[in-house]
Length: 385
Image 1: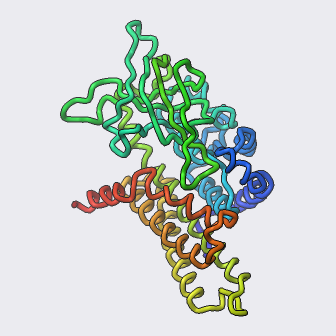
Image 2 (image 1 turned 90 degrees about the horizontal axis):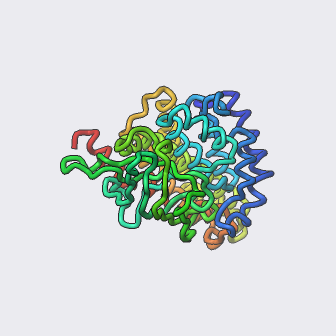
Image 3 (image 1 turned 120 degrees about the vertical axis):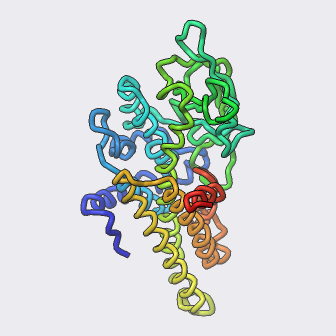
């Protein structure tokens, strides 16, 4: 179907990305899977092409693009190629905006150019062993020193994307006791240098999917963080997290729709080539009907993702619409990819086929960025329930 949200510049960018992935990503996929991370050199190559800072203002080395359209093209091409770019999209689309929106001018000049070039990779540490979606329950604490020059940070985080390779970690921590009437108050975001004494990377976690995207446990033991590394105002961190969640959910929705679209393409190609009882699998009515259903669901999901994309570019993306887009696109991707894997038969269960990797990789989309159940809660509130 035509993609009317994209113009000629986007399509030229699409071809450039397609060629780049074929040369620099696809041939290295298995090596990255075994290493549980893509190479740091690959992130620098992404930086050289401007793929890590497409929305960053020019004064910090970025492309100054408005909205997530180029990021959406990148997501679609990564899915189409059955490839990975590691934690790059999390780095640039989800974490980097915190620095741009809430950082001081000095902080932005200190950090953002390196983030755009790939020399500084970011992670954000929210989840704790005993605290998942309930961020107000965070136990990691930072105490301001008596002379007011630094915070002393203690605590532990888990499920941290990019944790083993990051240079800077945005740590969500408690800097003041929570008032009885507002558990969300008292959280702050500190930018921690991964070279800091007392900072440690624990286990690199084994996941069902996303095997080339590193995920780790982190710990902080009396880590001294300069007050100059406080992002925004002290005790206002929860507000900052909430403000960026709509964009995060848009990014996930776009990726999910792209994955579902790729699954249909993979299944179509496989069933046309594979013969059963002397005929292509695609010639059977069941195959035609299954792929027709999938294509229809994908089109509906993609239209909602694109509408969210347009609203975001206009500065009109609401929390409830972002939740709707994430819910629809991730649930659709789950159903569609499952059906497309079934059409591969036993080969669909083999990781050498991209459909198997899609099946494993997209399952987490219904969990991170807020679970489907959390999305339903947000939507229910928006309709007065």
